[in-house]
Image (cartoon, rainbow, N blue to C red; front, side, top):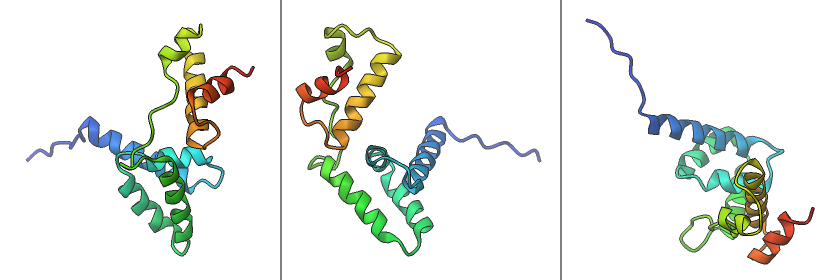
Length: 130
């Protein structure tokens, strides 16, 4: 009998990839707070926490701190907030779609997740300070 090669559906492969990236982010001591919040905000955060806890052994306080940071940012529903700035906001301010726009949106959202900006005006001030 001939064996068929099992091919994971794209969704399964994506889940594995994103879960492993989140685990690597959490285990990296140089990860920024916003990166850890995003890692815990994935669809598979329970898997991520389980894998990380197996790696940390006697350091569960690290996971507690990460979860507390996440909960400071997450809404009552446990989901990450919508970004304060959108591509449309930047287009209205004269920014063309492209890499620069993506960089500005990422910069604003990371600052939002870290609590450095709390409203749209602060986010605009941050990205247009140059």
